[in-house]
Length: 143
Image 1 (cartoon, one colour):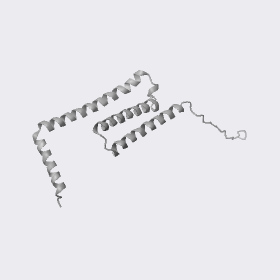
Image 2 (image 1 turned 60 degrees about the vertical axis):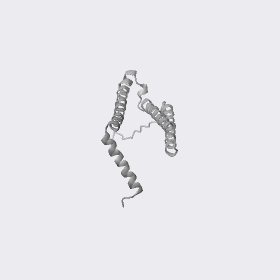
Image 3 (image 1 turned 90 degrees about the horizontal axis):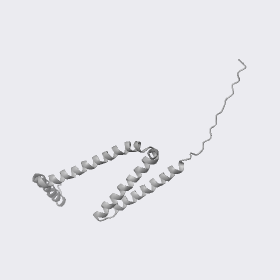
Image 4 (image 1 turned 180 degrees about the vertical axis):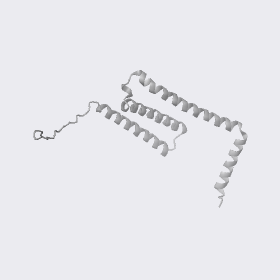
């Protein structure tokens, strides 16, 4: 039994920096810059009184910047940019169909609201009555 010596063996692993960290840092900086631009545009819209067309234009720019951020996140951090084309299409096509689905419902809802306001005279009258009551309570409080 004395023949067995109990010596602790130590395994030392030295951490070597990964080769692809430059790409990740570049993407992180790009995402940070895009986020700062979005925040700047959002604060500009919030704190200034811009014409309606400028507001709509800035909202469109923010949507485009958000899509660019989504592309970078999916491409780099989820490693989809390194996949084959068929795999990318398997993920992107259902996403595009889902976006189309949401846009179609929003468009249809806007159409329904417009038709309801145009053709339902009862709805129009009740809306006008509510606005008149709100105006009366604004000038003559209830209490």
